[in-house]
Image 1 (cartoon, rainbow, N blue to C red):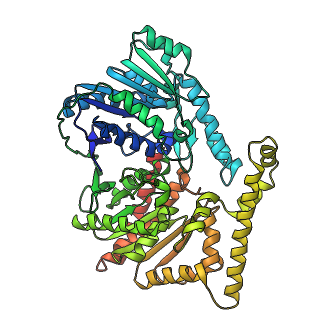
Image 2: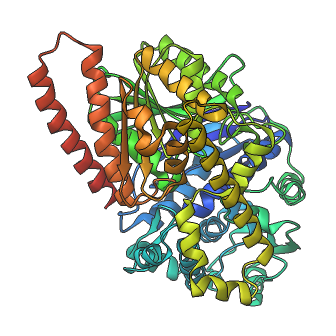
Image 3: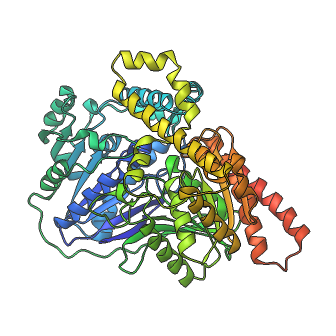
Length: 599
């Protein structure tokens, strides 16, 4: 890794090092779009730096790892000001002679409005905020309709003037500010030279290009070869390398060599916590954010990636969670495993890291890092694939003292074809698919060609395999023996329980993991419930990624009790009644804090 975590005002970022006289400031898209494009954005930053251009990636206020939240009514103005601050920082702190802005979607619009640089690259730019908001509203409805309870999800997504997208919220004041964006009314050329990369199916507005030229900018346009790779998807495709190379070529044309300054890392701080980006591991290939409470930490939570998403989590939930825990006196490290997010890139991308037991080595490296800082009483927390990694790591490393596993779908190792089927199948419970199959709206989508009939057959086949497997396991249990995945699952959890590892198992009431859990451990997870140190609970109404506000509130409440109990066990001399009173008080306060942050 050739990058350093930095803090610029209230924003967190990564500087990708190069000795060049032209720096690049990357202006990402926001929310769900930004989350899904993160891997391509990271690869682009690496390529720009490899071409000799020192490059800054940063999170806007209220986004990613930065401070702030979407409730700020002036948040869009804060995004523009942060771009200005980033450009100044590159010129003054790093010492570059020129700056190029590279923006994606809304980030491209904000970069054009800010301007004041030598070069500008706009990737699929938003030229009119009103059109962009219509796109987001449509996307919110489509994603809600694909959830386990589509009617309820659509109602929640459209219940107010806010737009809810996979846990991210475009508030009404934010939407009003975005709606006022119109690049055809720019008052000054944002840069001397501008490259506009656009979706082949949607050419840039002619009035926008005419405006740029009338203001004196030299404008080039180019069709994106793989626009879909930059659009939101649950499992983002590989980065569009041809398009990224076009950005690098334009941004680097005519740039010279120069020795630049090395920046101080800095930290983000509030009255409750101090956060800083960290790089660790034997070859410094792993990255994350260490969040420390003011005062000596009671214990530490290691927060693992969910799916291909980097360490901020769906809806930025992991960031909110880590900061809320500091009010209870807990430290945390939210980390990316190898191949995901800000950790070192691997050849086969983030997909190769999911459900890979070898990635337990990354967790052990994080435990080494925490141990060197005196943070030894560690609880692992993960959702879905992150929960599976937490399980693998706990089995491999005896330093793990507690596990909090949310929506875990597999209870042992999974490889090869079984792993690929799991990644393709999705995360809904069987009754959810059956309910959709009985829906007239679902069949209307098939008739209209929105959903391929072959896809329905694939889902039906997978469901039959799922139910067939469940029947075979149930029959084996009734005959008095367990084998295969059931035997492995029971052995894994019995081993951890015997070792004294505290385990909290949480599932959303519609999550397929509950079915798998009952297959492996008997009705209502009877085997697990009979083990010492193991608690099993259900989060009513929770979505798979626990991205909704209600899911996060319920999660924090249950996690607060669990962590405070683990903290008491780590200090057995403490008065039990006093500890219980403190646990109740702090858990309630923690839940209230998260609710306040989310509002």
